[in-house]
Length: 117
Length: 114
Image (cartoon, rainbow over all chains, first blue to last red; front, side, top):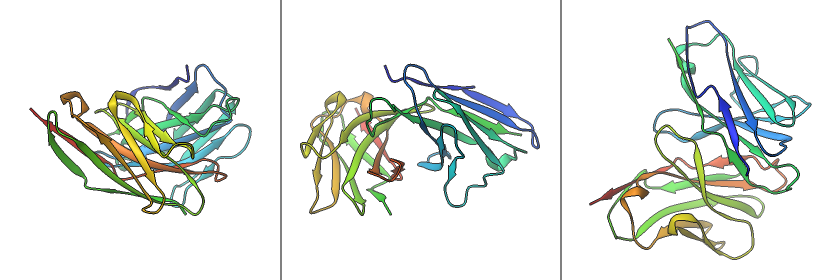
């Protein structure tokens, strides 16, 4: 149980285009999901907290207009990188909390590797 | 605000030797603490977690960690390293009531020598 998937697992796009990454909780409901980015050989940096049915909460320094987050259902959150540039190339990881279980534990997706050329 | 400090970006041990990865945290309220492992190009796998129950926490793959409030530490140990333990390890803290957002340490790369 408690599986989180991400799609796609890797994507290459041209500079200036937009890319959407999906995060799904496969066997549980998640009112709260989190988006992280990880640069090579670095730690995970929290970008935003995604709340079902409401606006995401962004961490300081994260451009909300560039990283659009939509959490339209209890099992799906999407991150759209708009007008991507090479510096947006990174490993994006989502996580989700099991709402009904009422626990603090987060379950992580396998990550999405974004390369902007 | 919560924070995590992992001492040592790289740790190298011989196979069969003790593994000790250090983690200190800062939190304004009693925290939840976690250790995760990450293999190259993969997501995170939870090794163990502290949630205010027993201070000595046992996890998967023979790892354990001890919560020491007086030292604000949550060091990860394993009595005998295996080659398959070579990976990146992250300590993380989550504050209760803070939306449970999790802050990660910088990570420690564990190398295991044959």
